[in-house]
Image (cartoon, rainbow, N blue to C red; front, side):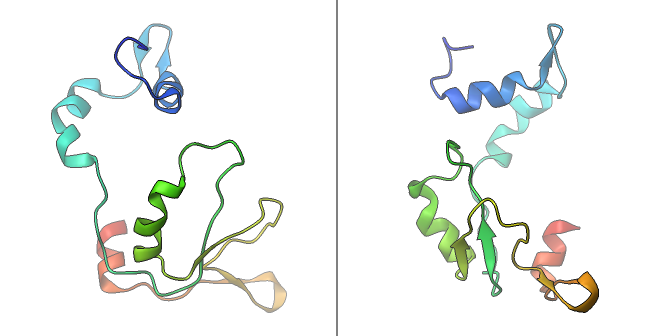
Length: 111
C-alpha cells in the first residue's frame, strides 16, 4: 500500500477495513464513485456553538482546514479533550440534553 500512498493516516485508516486478506467495504464502488465523494460540500453555515475535538496526535483536523471549518461553523472553538459535553448541545435541568433546531438544508443533508 505504501507504494501507492504516502499519507500514513490514510494508510492506517484503510487498513482498519482490511481483515484476513479481504476488504470490508465495497472497493469497486468506492473506486468508481470516488470523484463524487471526495472534497468538501459547502452547506449553509451552522449558526450555533460547535466544538471540534481533535486528538493531540491526530492528523485529521489540521491548520490547513481552519478557514473551511470556520466558514461552515463560525462559532467553532476548541475544547479540551477531558471535558465531557460537546457543542452544540446544552444540558438543562435534570441532565436533559437540548439541541438547537436544524435548518431545512441541514435536515436534507442528514436525512
